[in-house]
Length: 482
Ligand SMILES: Nc1nc2c(c(=O)[nH]1)N[C@H]1C(S)=C(S)[C@@H](COP(=O)(O)O)O[C@H]1N2
Ligand SMILES: [Mo]
Image (cartoon, rainbow, N blue to C red; front, top):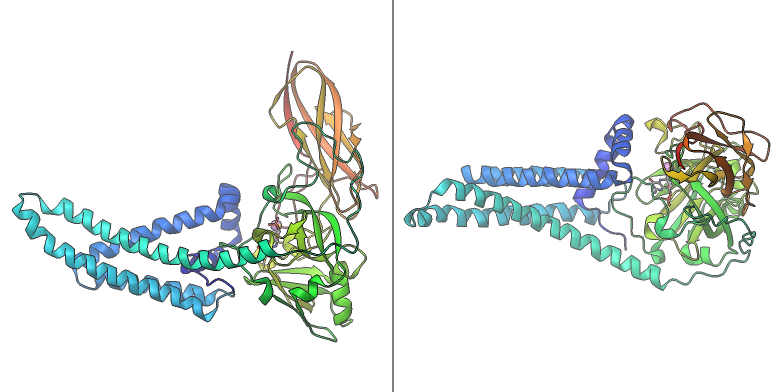
Protein backbone atom coordinates (compact mmCIF):
# COMPACT_ATOMS: atom_id res chain seq x y z
CA UNK A 1 0.00 0.00 0.00
CA UNK A 2 1.12 3.46 -0.80
CA UNK A 3 0.73 5.98 2.02
CA UNK A 4 -1.75 8.77 1.71
CA UNK A 5 -0.18 12.12 1.15
CA UNK A 6 -0.61 14.15 4.31
CA UNK A 7 -1.74 17.75 3.88
CA UNK A 8 1.24 18.97 5.89
CA UNK A 9 3.78 17.34 3.60
CA UNK A 10 1.71 18.14 0.53
CA UNK A 11 1.82 21.85 1.38
CA UNK A 12 5.52 21.49 2.20
CA UNK A 13 6.15 19.68 -1.07
CA UNK A 14 4.26 22.33 -2.99
CA UNK A 15 6.38 24.98 -1.25
CA UNK A 16 9.57 23.10 -2.19
CA UNK A 17 8.52 22.87 -5.84
CA UNK A 18 7.34 26.47 -6.03
CA UNK A 19 10.18 28.43 -4.44
CA UNK A 20 12.77 29.86 -6.84
CA UNK A 21 16.06 27.92 -7.07
CA UNK A 22 17.91 30.76 -5.34
CA UNK A 23 15.70 30.48 -2.25
CA UNK A 24 16.06 26.70 -2.26
CA UNK A 25 19.84 27.08 -2.51
CA UNK A 26 19.74 29.53 0.38
CA UNK A 27 17.67 27.18 2.51
CA UNK A 28 19.99 24.25 1.79
CA UNK A 29 23.03 26.41 2.55
CA UNK A 30 21.49 27.69 5.78
CA UNK A 31 19.96 24.48 7.12
CA UNK A 32 22.08 21.91 5.27
CA UNK A 33 20.41 18.53 5.21
CA UNK A 34 18.07 19.73 8.00
CA UNK A 35 16.31 21.90 5.41
CA UNK A 36 13.20 19.70 5.47
CA UNK A 37 13.03 19.72 9.25
CA UNK A 38 13.30 23.51 9.14
CA UNK A 39 10.46 23.68 6.62
CA UNK A 40 8.24 21.39 8.72
CA UNK A 41 9.00 23.33 11.90
CA UNK A 42 8.22 26.57 10.07
CA UNK A 43 4.93 25.13 8.90
CA UNK A 44 4.07 23.85 12.38
CA UNK A 45 4.61 27.37 13.73
CA UNK A 46 2.35 28.81 11.04
CA UNK A 47 -0.33 26.18 11.80
CA UNK A 48 -0.15 26.88 15.53
CA UNK A 49 -0.55 30.60 14.82
CA UNK A 50 -3.53 29.91 12.55
CA UNK A 51 -5.09 27.68 15.20
CA UNK A 52 -4.70 30.43 17.80
CA UNK A 53 -6.22 32.92 15.37
CA UNK A 54 -9.15 30.57 14.76
CA UNK A 55 -9.70 30.32 18.51
CA UNK A 56 -9.70 34.08 19.01
CA UNK A 57 -11.96 34.78 16.01
CA UNK A 58 -14.42 32.05 16.98
CA UNK A 59 -14.66 33.50 20.47
CA UNK A 60 -15.55 36.92 19.04
CA UNK A 61 -17.89 35.69 16.36
CA UNK A 62 -19.52 32.33 15.79
CA UNK A 63 -18.05 30.44 12.76
CA UNK A 64 -15.40 33.11 12.11
CA UNK A 65 -12.73 30.75 13.46
CA UNK A 66 -14.32 27.77 11.73
CA UNK A 67 -14.00 29.68 8.46
CA UNK A 68 -10.24 29.94 9.00
CA UNK A 69 -10.05 26.17 9.48
CA UNK A 70 -12.16 25.51 6.36
CA UNK A 71 -9.95 27.77 4.24
CA UNK A 72 -6.87 26.04 5.63
CA UNK A 73 -8.43 22.64 4.96
CA UNK A 74 -9.17 23.63 1.36
CA UNK A 75 -5.54 24.73 0.97
CA UNK A 76 -4.56 21.27 2.18
CA UNK A 77 -6.90 19.63 -0.36
CA UNK A 78 -5.53 21.79 -3.15
CA UNK A 79 -1.94 20.99 -2.17
CA UNK A 80 -2.66 17.25 -1.97
CA UNK A 81 -4.36 17.31 -5.38
CA UNK A 82 -1.43 19.05 -7.04
CA UNK A 83 1.08 16.50 -5.72
CA UNK A 84 1.77 13.88 -8.33
CA UNK A 85 1.85 10.95 -5.96
CA UNK A 86 -1.61 11.81 -4.60
CA UNK A 87 -4.15 9.02 -4.48
CA UNK A 88 -7.86 9.99 -4.42
CA UNK A 89 -8.00 8.77 -0.82
CA UNK A 90 -5.43 11.38 0.17
CA UNK A 91 -8.07 14.10 -0.06
CA UNK A 92 -10.01 12.44 2.75
CA UNK A 93 -7.32 13.33 5.29
CA UNK A 94 -7.45 17.16 5.09
CA UNK A 95 -11.27 17.01 4.92
CA UNK A 96 -11.50 14.77 8.00
CA UNK A 97 -8.96 16.87 9.87
CA UNK A 98 -10.80 20.10 9.05
CA UNK A 99 -14.17 18.61 10.12
CA UNK A 100 -12.66 17.29 13.36
CA UNK A 101 -11.01 20.66 14.03
CA UNK A 102 -14.28 22.58 13.49
CA UNK A 103 -16.25 20.23 15.77
CA UNK A 104 -13.55 20.47 18.43
CA UNK A 105 -13.46 24.24 18.12
CA UNK A 106 -17.26 24.55 18.50
CA UNK A 107 -17.22 22.15 21.45
CA UNK A 108 -14.48 24.04 23.29
CA UNK A 109 -16.09 27.38 22.46
CA UNK A 110 -19.35 26.21 24.02
CA UNK A 111 -17.48 25.43 27.24
CA UNK A 112 -15.57 28.69 27.11
CA UNK A 113 -18.68 30.84 26.72
CA UNK A 114 -20.28 29.34 29.83
CA UNK A 115 -17.05 29.79 31.81
CA UNK A 116 -16.68 33.56 32.44
CA UNK A 117 -19.86 33.74 34.62
CA UNK A 118 -18.56 31.00 36.89
CA UNK A 119 -15.12 32.55 37.34
CA UNK A 120 -16.72 35.96 37.90
CA UNK A 121 -18.45 34.55 40.99
CA UNK A 122 -15.11 33.31 42.22
CA UNK A 123 -13.93 36.91 42.00
CA UNK A 124 -11.30 36.30 39.34
CA UNK A 125 -10.59 38.50 36.37
CA UNK A 126 -12.02 37.08 33.14
CA UNK A 127 -9.86 38.28 30.26
CA UNK A 128 -6.45 36.70 30.98
CA UNK A 129 -8.03 33.31 31.59
CA UNK A 130 -10.19 33.72 28.53
CA UNK A 131 -7.31 34.36 26.15
CA UNK A 132 -5.47 31.46 27.70
CA UNK A 133 -8.44 29.20 27.03
CA UNK A 134 -8.73 30.47 23.49
CA UNK A 135 -5.13 29.50 22.91
CA UNK A 136 -5.79 26.15 24.51
CA UNK A 137 -8.74 25.53 22.15
CA UNK A 138 -6.64 26.37 19.14
CA UNK A 139 -3.77 24.26 20.38
CA UNK A 140 -6.03 21.28 20.99
CA UNK A 141 -7.44 21.52 17.46
CA UNK A 142 -3.96 21.65 15.98
CA UNK A 143 -2.82 18.69 18.07
CA UNK A 144 -5.81 16.63 17.00
CA UNK A 145 -5.06 17.40 13.37
CA UNK A 146 -1.41 16.42 13.79
CA UNK A 147 -2.35 13.19 15.55
CA UNK A 148 -4.62 12.06 12.72
CA UNK A 149 -1.93 12.78 10.14
CA UNK A 150 0.77 10.98 12.07
CA UNK A 151 -1.43 7.89 12.57
CA UNK A 152 -2.29 7.64 8.86
CA UNK A 153 1.35 8.01 7.90
CA UNK A 154 2.75 5.58 10.44
CA UNK A 155 0.27 2.84 9.53
CA UNK A 156 1.31 2.90 5.89
CA UNK A 157 5.05 3.07 6.58
CA UNK A 158 4.89 0.16 9.05
CA UNK A 159 3.39 -2.17 6.42
CA UNK A 160 6.22 -1.41 4.01
CA UNK A 161 8.90 -1.65 6.70
CA UNK A 162 7.66 -5.16 7.50
CA UNK A 163 7.72 -6.13 3.83
CA UNK A 164 11.31 -4.86 3.59
CA UNK A 165 12.38 -6.75 6.70
CA UNK A 166 10.97 -10.02 5.40
CA UNK A 167 12.54 -9.65 1.98
CA UNK A 168 15.26 -12.15 1.06
CA UNK A 169 17.37 -10.80 -1.76
CA UNK A 170 18.83 -13.38 -4.17
CA UNK A 171 22.59 -13.75 -4.48
CA UNK A 172 24.26 -11.96 -7.36
CA UNK A 173 24.99 -14.05 -10.45
CA UNK A 174 28.00 -11.80 -10.90
CA UNK A 175 29.48 -11.00 -7.49
CA UNK A 176 31.27 -7.77 -6.60
CA UNK A 177 35.01 -7.99 -7.33
CA UNK A 178 36.96 -8.44 -4.13
CA UNK A 179 38.25 -5.29 -2.47
CA UNK A 180 42.02 -5.26 -3.12
CA UNK A 181 44.18 -5.45 -0.03
CA UNK A 182 45.45 -2.03 0.93
CA UNK A 183 42.46 -0.24 -0.62
CA UNK A 184 41.45 0.75 2.90
CA UNK A 185 44.48 2.60 4.25
CA UNK A 186 43.49 2.34 7.91
CA UNK A 187 44.54 5.83 8.92
CA UNK A 188 42.63 7.05 12.01
CA UNK A 189 40.01 9.68 11.20
CA UNK A 190 39.44 8.48 7.62
CA UNK A 191 35.95 7.64 6.43
CA UNK A 192 35.38 3.93 5.77
CA UNK A 193 36.07 2.89 2.16
CA UNK A 194 32.54 1.45 1.98
CA UNK A 195 30.01 3.76 3.58
CA UNK A 196 27.61 2.06 6.03
CA UNK A 197 23.96 2.58 5.03
CA UNK A 198 23.16 4.53 8.19
CA UNK A 199 25.93 7.02 7.42
CA UNK A 200 25.16 7.35 3.73
CA UNK A 201 24.27 10.91 2.71
CA UNK A 202 20.67 11.49 1.74
CA UNK A 203 19.43 14.05 -0.75
CA UNK A 204 15.92 14.25 -2.19
CA UNK A 205 12.88 16.49 -2.40
CA UNK A 206 10.65 14.00 -0.54
CA UNK A 207 9.34 15.43 2.75
CA UNK A 208 8.17 12.04 3.91
CA UNK A 209 9.93 8.98 2.59
CA UNK A 210 7.69 7.21 0.05
CA UNK A 211 6.60 3.81 1.39
CA UNK A 212 6.07 1.46 -1.54
CA UNK A 213 4.85 -2.11 -1.12
CA UNK A 214 7.22 -4.21 -3.28
CA UNK A 215 4.36 -6.62 -4.05
CA UNK A 216 2.56 -3.78 -5.82
CA UNK A 217 5.64 -2.22 -7.43
CA UNK A 218 5.77 -2.16 -11.23
CA UNK A 219 8.36 -0.56 -13.47
CA UNK A 220 7.09 0.64 -16.84
CA UNK A 221 9.37 1.22 -19.80
CA UNK A 222 7.58 3.65 -22.11
CA UNK A 223 8.20 6.22 -24.85
CA UNK A 224 10.36 5.78 -27.92
CA UNK A 225 10.67 2.01 -27.75
CA UNK A 226 9.70 -0.83 -30.08
CA UNK A 227 8.24 -2.70 -27.11
CA UNK A 228 6.75 -1.21 -23.95
CA UNK A 229 7.58 -3.28 -20.89
CA UNK A 230 6.11 -3.82 -17.43
CA UNK A 231 8.33 -5.42 -14.83
CA UNK A 232 7.21 -6.57 -11.37
CA UNK A 233 9.50 -6.79 -8.36
CA UNK A 234 9.40 -10.61 -8.42
CA UNK A 235 10.36 -10.60 -12.11
CA UNK A 236 13.21 -8.21 -11.39
CA UNK A 237 14.58 -10.41 -8.60
CA UNK A 238 14.50 -13.41 -10.96
CA UNK A 239 16.89 -11.69 -13.41
CA UNK A 240 20.64 -12.38 -13.31
CA UNK A 241 21.76 -9.72 -10.84
CA UNK A 242 25.17 -8.11 -10.54
CA UNK A 243 26.77 -6.65 -7.44
CA UNK A 244 29.21 -3.73 -7.75
CA UNK A 245 30.77 -1.03 -5.62
CA UNK A 246 29.82 2.39 -6.98
CA UNK A 247 30.52 5.79 -5.43
CA UNK A 248 27.61 8.14 -5.97
CA UNK A 249 27.82 11.89 -5.43
CA UNK A 250 25.53 14.90 -5.31
CA UNK A 251 26.02 17.84 -7.65
CA UNK A 252 25.50 20.04 -4.56
CA UNK A 253 28.60 18.60 -2.92
CA UNK A 254 30.91 21.52 -2.17
CA UNK A 255 34.67 21.13 -2.57
CA UNK A 256 35.63 19.21 0.57
CA UNK A 257 31.99 18.30 1.23
CA UNK A 258 30.41 15.06 2.37
CA UNK A 259 27.52 14.57 -0.07
CA UNK A 260 29.24 11.50 -1.50
CA UNK A 261 29.22 7.85 -0.49
CA UNK A 262 30.41 4.47 -1.65
CA UNK A 263 28.18 1.39 -1.44
CA UNK A 264 27.97 -2.16 -2.78
CA UNK A 265 24.86 -2.16 -4.93
CA UNK A 266 22.93 -5.25 -6.08
CA UNK A 267 20.85 -4.88 -9.22
CA UNK A 268 19.99 -5.75 -12.79
CA UNK A 269 21.88 -3.89 -15.55
CA UNK A 270 19.61 -1.26 -17.13
CA UNK A 271 21.07 -2.01 -20.56
CA UNK A 272 19.52 -5.51 -20.45
CA UNK A 273 16.07 -4.08 -19.78
CA UNK A 274 16.50 -1.45 -22.50
CA UNK A 275 17.70 -4.12 -24.94
CA UNK A 276 14.34 -5.87 -24.47
CA UNK A 277 12.46 -2.60 -25.06
CA UNK A 278 14.58 -1.67 -28.12
CA UNK A 279 14.85 2.16 -28.08
CA UNK A 280 14.23 3.96 -31.37
CA UNK A 281 17.28 5.42 -33.15
CA UNK A 282 16.29 9.07 -32.51
CA UNK A 283 16.06 8.62 -28.71
CA UNK A 284 18.92 10.11 -26.66
CA UNK A 285 17.59 10.34 -23.10
CA UNK A 286 15.85 8.23 -20.48
CA UNK A 287 13.56 10.17 -18.18
CA UNK A 288 13.33 8.12 -15.00
CA UNK A 289 10.38 8.86 -12.76
CA UNK A 290 9.82 8.35 -9.07
CA UNK A 291 6.50 7.69 -7.31
CA UNK A 292 6.71 11.19 -5.85
CA UNK A 293 6.84 12.76 -9.32
CA UNK A 294 10.55 13.57 -9.22
CA UNK A 295 12.42 12.92 -12.49
CA UNK A 296 15.99 12.58 -13.76
CA UNK A 297 17.20 12.77 -17.36
CA UNK A 298 20.03 10.36 -18.20
CA UNK A 299 21.80 10.10 -21.57
CA UNK A 300 20.62 6.88 -23.24
CA UNK A 301 24.19 5.95 -24.21
CA UNK A 302 25.30 5.89 -20.56
CA UNK A 303 22.52 3.40 -19.78
CA UNK A 304 23.32 1.16 -22.76
CA UNK A 305 27.14 1.13 -22.76
CA UNK A 306 29.16 -1.46 -20.84
CA UNK A 307 29.20 0.34 -17.47
CA UNK A 308 27.29 -1.09 -14.51
CA UNK A 309 24.24 1.21 -14.60
CA UNK A 310 21.64 -0.77 -12.70
CA UNK A 311 18.14 -1.08 -11.33
CA UNK A 312 19.38 -1.47 -7.77
CA UNK A 313 17.48 -3.48 -5.14
CA UNK A 314 20.28 -4.00 -2.60
CA UNK A 315 22.69 -1.73 -0.76
CA UNK A 316 25.61 -3.20 1.19
CA UNK A 317 23.98 -6.60 1.51
CA UNK A 318 20.46 -5.55 2.49
CA UNK A 319 17.36 -4.34 0.68
CA UNK A 320 17.55 -0.62 -0.09
CA UNK A 321 16.71 1.41 3.01
CA UNK A 322 13.44 3.31 2.51
CA UNK A 323 15.31 6.65 2.40
CA UNK A 324 17.58 5.33 -0.34
CA UNK A 325 14.81 4.34 -2.71
CA UNK A 326 13.15 1.09 -1.60
CA UNK A 327 12.24 -1.07 -3.39
CA UNK A 328 14.13 -0.05 -6.57
CA UNK A 329 16.38 2.84 -7.58
CA UNK A 330 18.78 3.69 -10.35
CA UNK A 331 22.55 3.74 -9.80
CA UNK A 332 24.67 4.99 -12.69
CA UNK A 333 28.46 5.14 -12.37
CA UNK A 334 29.90 8.49 -13.45
CA UNK A 335 26.89 10.80 -13.20
CA UNK A 336 25.72 13.05 -10.38
CA UNK A 337 22.61 11.79 -8.60
CA UNK A 338 20.28 14.48 -9.91
CA UNK A 339 20.62 13.19 -13.51
CA UNK A 340 20.75 9.48 -12.75
CA UNK A 341 20.05 8.08 -9.29
CA UNK A 342 16.22 8.09 -9.18
CA UNK A 343 14.93 6.55 -5.97
CA UNK A 344 11.45 4.95 -5.61
CA UNK A 345 11.66 4.31 -9.35
CA UNK A 346 8.45 3.57 -11.29
CA UNK A 347 9.00 4.47 -14.91
CA UNK A 348 11.71 4.74 -17.54
CA UNK A 349 10.52 6.89 -20.42
CA UNK A 350 12.78 6.65 -23.44
CA UNK A 351 12.73 10.11 -24.96
CA UNK A 352 14.90 12.97 -26.25
CA UNK A 353 16.61 15.87 -24.44
CA UNK A 354 14.84 18.11 -26.98
CA UNK A 355 11.41 16.86 -25.87
CA UNK A 356 11.56 16.33 -22.10
CA UNK A 357 13.02 18.13 -19.10
CA UNK A 358 13.86 16.54 -15.75
CA UNK A 359 13.03 18.00 -12.32
CA UNK A 360 16.16 20.09 -11.72
CA UNK A 361 16.75 21.32 -15.27
CA UNK A 362 14.34 24.29 -15.21
CA UNK A 363 15.55 25.06 -11.67
CA UNK A 364 19.03 26.26 -12.56
CA UNK A 365 20.93 23.01 -13.08
CA UNK A 366 22.53 21.64 -16.23
CA UNK A 367 20.66 18.93 -18.15
CA UNK A 368 23.88 16.85 -18.28
CA UNK A 369 25.76 16.07 -15.07
CA UNK A 370 28.92 13.96 -15.39
CA UNK A 371 30.75 13.81 -12.05
CA UNK A 372 33.81 16.07 -11.96
CA UNK A 373 37.14 14.63 -10.88
CA UNK A 374 37.75 15.75 -7.31
CA UNK A 375 39.61 15.00 -4.11
CA UNK A 376 39.32 15.68 -0.40
CA UNK A 377 41.59 15.85 2.64
CA UNK A 378 40.02 14.07 5.63
CA UNK A 379 43.02 13.81 7.97
CA UNK A 380 43.78 16.10 9.63
CA UNK A 381 40.53 18.03 9.59
CA UNK A 382 40.68 21.68 8.56
CA UNK A 383 42.03 23.87 11.37
CA UNK A 384 43.26 20.95 13.50
CA UNK A 385 46.43 21.19 15.54
CA UNK A 386 49.03 18.49 15.02
CA UNK A 387 52.46 17.78 16.45
CA UNK A 388 55.58 18.77 14.50
CA UNK A 389 57.51 16.05 12.69
CA UNK A 390 56.18 13.61 10.11
CA UNK A 391 52.50 14.54 9.76
CA UNK A 392 50.27 11.89 8.15
CA UNK A 393 47.58 13.22 5.83
CA UNK A 394 44.89 11.18 4.18
CA UNK A 395 41.74 11.43 2.15
CA UNK A 396 39.84 10.32 -0.92
CA UNK A 397 39.82 11.09 -4.64
CA UNK A 398 37.29 10.15 -7.32
CA UNK A 399 36.80 10.25 -11.08
CA UNK A 400 33.95 7.80 -11.56
CA UNK A 401 34.17 5.55 -14.58
CA UNK A 402 37.62 6.86 -15.51
CA UNK A 403 39.50 6.13 -12.32
CA UNK A 404 42.19 8.00 -10.41
CA UNK A 405 45.78 7.91 -11.64
CA UNK A 406 47.50 10.27 -9.25
CA UNK A 407 46.94 12.38 -6.13
CA UNK A 408 49.28 15.22 -5.17
CA UNK A 409 49.56 17.63 -2.25
CA UNK A 410 51.17 21.03 -1.96
CA UNK A 411 52.02 23.06 1.12
CA UNK A 412 51.77 26.86 1.07
CA UNK A 413 51.43 26.78 -2.75
CA UNK A 414 54.87 25.15 -3.12
CA UNK A 415 55.67 22.27 -5.47
CA UNK A 416 53.16 19.46 -5.87
CA UNK A 417 54.34 16.21 -4.28
CA UNK A 418 52.93 12.75 -4.94
CA UNK A 419 50.68 11.19 -2.32
CA UNK A 420 50.55 7.42 -1.85
CA UNK A 421 47.53 6.27 -3.86
CA UNK A 422 45.82 3.13 -2.51
CA UNK A 423 44.46 0.63 -5.05
CA UNK A 424 40.87 1.38 -6.00
CA UNK A 425 38.02 -1.13 -5.83
CA UNK A 426 37.17 -0.15 -9.41
CA UNK A 427 37.24 2.95 -11.60
CA UNK A 428 33.64 3.59 -10.43
CA UNK A 429 34.60 4.12 -6.80
CA UNK A 430 36.61 6.61 -4.83
CA UNK A 431 40.22 5.84 -3.94
CA UNK A 432 41.92 6.50 -0.62
CA UNK A 433 45.31 8.15 -0.42
CA UNK A 434 47.85 9.01 2.30
CA UNK A 435 50.84 11.28 2.43
CA UNK A 436 53.46 11.89 5.12
CA UNK A 437 54.89 15.42 5.18
CA UNK A 438 57.60 16.80 7.46
CA UNK A 439 56.30 19.95 9.12
CA UNK A 440 58.00 22.26 11.61
CA UNK A 441 55.93 24.40 14.04
CA UNK A 442 53.79 27.04 12.34
CA UNK A 443 50.61 27.39 10.34
CA UNK A 444 50.31 25.82 6.90
CA UNK A 445 47.89 25.72 3.99
CA UNK A 446 47.61 22.28 2.39
CA UNK A 447 45.91 21.58 -0.94
CA UNK A 448 45.10 18.37 -2.78
CA UNK A 449 44.81 17.69 -6.51
CA UNK A 450 43.69 14.50 -8.29
CA UNK A 451 44.48 13.41 -11.83
CA UNK A 452 42.37 10.79 -13.58
CA UNK A 453 43.66 7.70 -15.38
CA UNK A 454 43.48 9.54 -18.71
CA UNK A 455 45.96 12.11 -17.36
CA UNK A 456 43.45 14.92 -16.84
CA UNK A 457 43.89 16.88 -13.60
CA UNK A 458 40.92 18.22 -11.66
CA UNK A 459 40.08 21.87 -12.37
CA UNK A 460 41.79 24.48 -10.19
CA UNK A 461 39.30 27.30 -10.85
CA UNK A 462 36.89 27.73 -7.93
CA UNK A 463 33.34 27.34 -9.20
CA UNK A 464 30.07 26.97 -7.29
CA UNK A 465 27.96 23.79 -7.26
CA UNK A 466 25.38 25.23 -9.70
CA UNK A 467 24.85 24.55 -12.55
CA UNK A 468 26.89 21.35 -12.92
CA UNK A 469 29.15 20.71 -9.93
CA UNK A 470 31.81 22.58 -7.92
CA UNK A 471 35.47 22.74 -8.91
CA UNK A 472 38.62 23.90 -7.12
CA UNK A 473 41.19 22.33 -4.84
CA UNK A 474 40.20 21.30 -1.33
CA UNK A 475 42.28 23.57 0.89
CA UNK A 476 42.84 23.19 4.63
CA UNK A 477 44.93 24.92 7.26
CA UNK A 478 47.00 22.92 9.69
CA UNK A 479 48.43 24.29 12.95
CA UNK A 480 51.67 22.56 13.82
CA UNK A 481 52.68 22.74 17.51
CA UNK A 482 56.17 21.83 18.75
N1 LIG B 1 12.86 10.27 -6.17
C1 LIG B 1 13.99 10.97 -6.02
N2 LIG B 1 15.17 10.41 -6.33
C2 LIG B 1 16.32 11.10 -6.19
C3 LIG B 1 16.30 12.43 -5.71
C4 LIG B 1 15.04 13.01 -5.40
O1 LIG B 1 14.94 14.17 -4.99
N3 LIG B 1 13.92 12.25 -5.56
N4 LIG B 1 17.48 13.11 -5.56
C5 LIG B 1 18.63 12.66 -6.34
C6 LIG B 1 19.86 13.27 -5.91
S1 LIG B 1 20.03 14.94 -6.20
C7 LIG B 1 20.90 12.55 -5.37
S2 LIG B 1 22.39 13.26 -5.10
C8 LIG B 1 20.72 11.12 -5.03
C9 LIG B 1 21.08 10.87 -3.59
O2 LIG B 1 20.87 9.52 -3.28
P1 LIG B 1 20.93 9.09 -1.75
O3 LIG B 1 19.94 9.93 -1.00
O4 LIG B 1 20.61 7.64 -1.71
O5 LIG B 1 22.34 9.37 -1.29
O6 LIG B 1 19.38 10.69 -5.23
C10 LIG B 1 18.78 11.15 -6.39
N5 LIG B 1 17.49 10.50 -6.50
MO1 LIG C 1 22.06 15.53 -5.73
